[in-house]
Image (cartoon, rainbow, N blue to C red; front, side):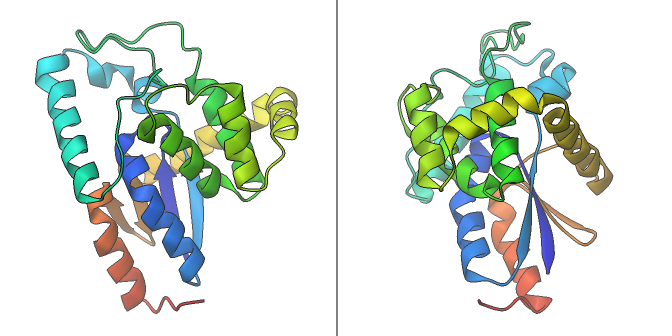
Length: 214
């Protein structure tokens, strides 16, 4: 059995679902295809036009904190934010020093069949710790924790940028074909499950379709 999991490093809801996705991958005989995409702020910056702190970001933050408490997961506003953007106006900065680097590292991890595992480590750094997720020492530790050579990853990002960008854009095309632009998005056959709160429905369908424990 195969299912697609569309993920963004800027999405706190993706962070919230990752432990369950990783547990599913480990415990059941299913191939979870990790589909890394750039955040919506990169793919569709117009989405944030007119959205400001009170109309959008505050409500989202309250919701995320509530869901994190229910899941007994730590949650902090990312420092730095993977996307440089004004929470007051919603305007996205032209200079983006973090998101492409972490996305490209994440894609390299997937090339080594560790995309979900590396995402789990790094997402915890981004949303589960107070600051410094982007420190080279923290990213190195995240890679080592899942059996990856961080120096090699850095070299592959440099050597294979075109291939990495093409792979991410292919994932974005597949996401559009699935009929949704949001993350986390889980897709099995022609059925889509958007949002971390849809995980149980996603898993139940897989069980109904015959998914077995390893």
